[in-house]
Image (cartoon, rainbow, N blue to C red; front, side, top):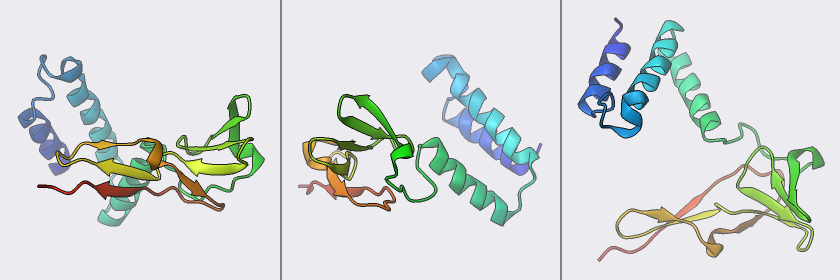
Length: 141
């Protein structure tokens, strides 16, 4: 067993993620271990491992690797006059305002560390656009 596999298994066990009373009956621990084992079998060096992890993380979160272009083929009409970007689900445009916007442009974080979005989260954008989020922290007492 490699160092990575051994480390991951111990950490998942300590977190209780294999336990039958954990979320999804212990399946989270099992599925994460499957991913770790595949990654380990690929035999990455430090540099390739870092690149793969970075790219995989972005893709798993539906984050595009290159800027959005705003071209017609990037959009899906989800209701009459409202379009959602196929490459970044938080980006929309509507026929009424003729402007594109990111509904996750601003994320607010309350004093307890809970983040949320609201109508003030919308940020109007221009293309090319690489999705980014500004975090706004509520002042702590």
